Image (cartoon, rainbow, N blue to C red; front, top):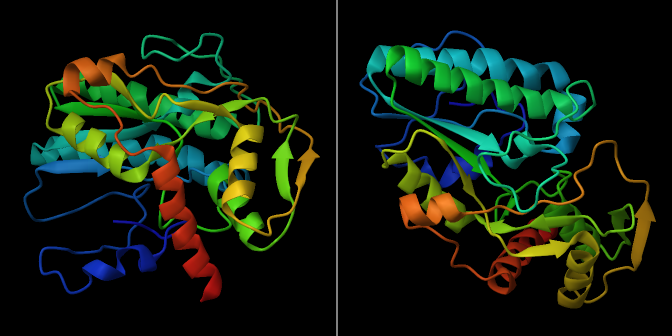
Length: 282
């Protein structure tokens, strides 16, 4: 179910002939009705790129609040397990490092990024309220930077931005001095962690991400090494409230889910570049 505000039918075209797959175009900020039985609801609806949620601030807030409320209502009506896709952005610009699930975060609620951060923080709060009040079987996954095939080339996030610029032979734009850090998790690892969480008895938030940390400047240089013809690195001013560090503590995922990432960055980034190279040639 998707209103395709930022999504694309191309991403699910390979399921079009699958009799066990059904796509419903719908905005989950409106009441959700479904006649059949439902076992699991995976609530991933939200703009997630800074480009998107800065351009669509009201929609981002509505899907985190109204959309989550509607999806939880459906889970209650159907007796379904509910999994919320939250984000490392609930930690804001963190004052502890790496980030553990019991850290409450350092978020500017009225800053430009606050529309995404606070929407997800509200979504977590209402999810726990439904669990405590109505006994809904809920899960919360806090997703750290994820990358892989089927990302949008002009998504605005660092992986498609750097790869797209490099493939076009353009300069790679680094915001600030590039000393800010990120931790990149390949998409198949993320999905494995989410599936394990959905099948678990855990109701507290769980970080899913790769704890291997690198600076943005280091990442830019790795892309330049992997893509011949990439331009030089250029620097632009750092966006408001851009986090200085981002690294998950995955102790809870390891102990409760038996999960940790297995795809090396060197392997995952090659697969991702290959996908974007094909998209650029189309």
